[in-house]
Length: 408
Image (tube, rainbow, N blue to C red):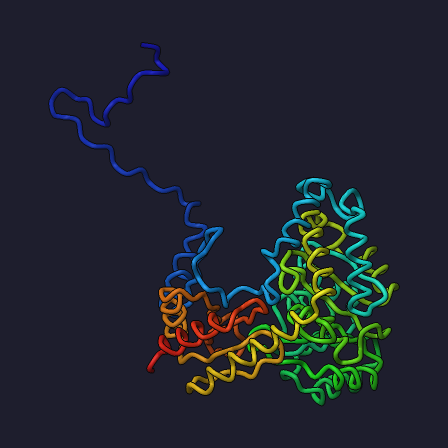
């Protein structure tokens, strides 16, 4: 038998005693580099804050009040066909960054139609809503800029502030006077950053009052309208449209294509000179691969469908209000929704997790928000209304949430 294929020898081959099992090899010292992860994992378990990936099947039997498909378009035949046709024509991927080979005629078409729909001069499509927020915040600020950021803002806006190297002041949630006070005394460039509809509780920012505060001090206003597009404003044109701010020269909006439009990707909308600046300076645009054609095609089909069926926006708001009314009438504590997100308070992280699990066992998928995802430390179920839910499905959802509610 060749030497390199001989069976391994036992640890002790002495004829005086039988072979002994091999001892466990000593772990190299450098393997301890990530031992701190075990401590962190144990701390999460003790606090009831472990998060777990839960892959869903293509045809889930659960009634979904957890996703963000507000208009019920993610599986709409026209939207799916738009995505499929785009993939067949343009390929599975964008093949490069937008400035190299990643811009197709389809990207340009979506940008033009979305800008016109939302009432802005121009638009720029990025690979995600997260990337869009990073692009807008970092490209519109610099060292020496003052950013005033609402305390309830989404993590992507917060990360944009951190990456910008600007001076960031966090203002109390949804308080225009606090914004005005923060801007007072600052003589340089300033940017006020806010969600339009806050993703945790579903409440709305006072956009008209914020715009007044900005204009008093010459600051720009950046609005993340991820949860407003498709739900608020005339025919779902978004919160800036509803507030009378769409198209104003000092207002920039970001949206995501992954909620009301049932696809994926992010967009920055604003004055043409802002979009031109982002194309030349925004790192999360310049150095990222362009959005896949299928996502662009799906979003474009969804946008056109929404233009034809504006009642979907009205229905989503009505469903959210109906859920709120019925859950609070049953004695639960909830935040009145401004759009399609309903937040229902839970006593603790552990009870919130158990409540969501009990709902799932009963056939209902709901969101579960716990620290550190929520800045106020309050755990809650997060429900999302959908325009395509039937009255019978709403009855089932309300009955399930009430029946499984914690008693402590």
